[in-house]
Amino acid sequence: MIRIENLHMQFGGIHAVENVSLSIEKGSITGLIGPNGAGKTTLFNCIAGAYTPTSGKIYLDDEEITGLKPHELFARGLLRTFQIAQEFSTLTVRENLMMVPGDQCGESLIDTWLRPAKVREEEERIRAKADSVIEFLEITHVADELAGNLSGGQKKLLELGRTMMVDAKIVFLDEVGAGVNRTLLNTLGDAIQRLNKEHGYTFCMIEHDMDFVGRLCDPVIVMAEGELLAEGTIEDIKSNEHVIEAYLGTGLKNKPEPKS
Amino acid sequence: MVDFLNAFALLSNFVIVPAMTYGSQLALGALGVTLVYGILRFSNFAHGDTMAFGTMVTIFATWGLQSAGVSIHPLPTALLALPVGIAATVALCLVIDRSVYKFYRKSRSVPVVFLIASVGVMFVLNGVVRFIIGPGDQRFADGERFIIKAKAFKKLTGLNEGIAFKTSQGLTIVTAIIVVAALFWFLNRTRSGKSMRAYSDNEDLARLSGINPERVVMITWTLAAVLATIAGVLYGLDKSFKPFTYFQLLLPIFASAIVGGLGNPLGAIAGGFVIAFSEVVVAYAYKKFLTYLVPEQWAPDSLVQLLSTDYKFAVSFVILVLVLLIRPTGIFKGKGA
Image (cartoon, rainbow over the protein chains, first blue to last red):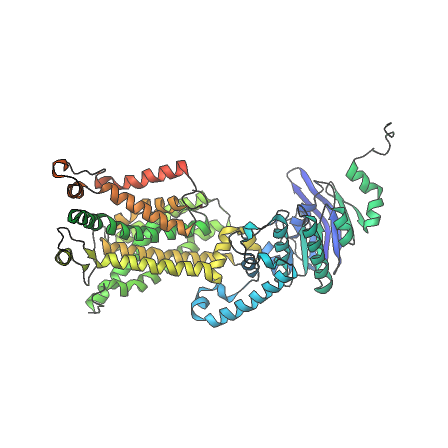
């Protein structure tokens, strides 16, 4: 689905992402883990169009998408969420969701005044869709709340909901579980799994919570210092020496056991 | 009791009614400024001259209608000509956006660059308007001049002081209410309006959703042009049209928008009335008013005027400085000045 070839991203003298090649299979939930500063979010930003990579190529379904703008990628079904949830704080949850689909005829001034029936019909359709998304995510009780008043976890659900308003092919989740309480995290995990199984979404997620990763992701990709370190199932990764080293620091296991 | 009523009538005639009218005009102007600020994120200095341009076109259309013998007596003919002015101003704003601001949007310039560009647009429009219609005073109000005449009011109530209610004043207040109601309906109920609010709220996210930024910008200019023309024509009907006066209006309009909270439409309306009432209240001579209220011996000799009318623009300045010092986000929380 997504293929990345020799991707480099350089900021001044710093190599944030170095020679990364990987592919994400259609229908998978791929986890992307690694210590802080490993280049995970930079890689996401390159794929999702926020940065243009220094060199290398990115393909979506064998079509090159390197350097396309975020809204162009949105139109192709490549969506992302943010590490810090983004929302339209002065609109309600339902209005936030209804904002997502593009090219609505109600956006044209002429149609608003001259073709109210067509606009209303379209709005009904989108409202129904938004309501079904709200129900799916179990946030019916806050549907008419201003999005700015939601808790951090509910905002993350709203972000996920936004991807459901259009037919996404692949969704990049940037630390969707960070700062979310356990109950909401379960709801979130269920939603991701159901979207994956029932709607055929492909996910790629950056995550620090290993339980969450273990529950959802296969395969898991590990990055460290801008490079790809390992790839495999969560069991492979957990027992991989390089990975443990990257997380805990080098030379740890050669040191003598501290005497108690 | 009669003295009290006389004092009240006097105050209504010279303070309350004029301030309400002026406040409505400022509110309409400030709404345009605040919308542009909320969406395009810059202070549009050309707004006053956009008003002048719209009014100028409306005046020409009015003269045309008058010479053709068209009239909607007792209402001023200018109302009939207003759509022409609006159409021309919308076209002007869209053309300016295409030829000036779009370039800076593409190169993602900082707001101050837009602001400077708008100063340039201001000078150009200023020149164009004066070149076409001349720098002098133009009167284009016709129809019935008064809804209530001071004499009729005196006769009706038997008071010494009359309240005159001009057609232009009534028209201004009624139009302002209708326009504001329509604008709020548009912003809160229609998809276009919600897109505008969403774009103003979180531009990056809006670009990632299905919102077409160029379309939002176009709608914003259209609304700003409509508001500017209506405000300008109402002001011209109430007072008179002179290009330089419209340029000067920029200060109280900006003061209104900032006092209310830049980017906040409700704030723009509140700010308009705050500025208008302050200007009129401070510049009014209270001698007669006090004479009615206090015993004869206490009647003041001086005019009891806090500030000469020549200085009324200073009021906007003082309020502006106070707001920026004490509460920079304005009465209603705006985006900060």
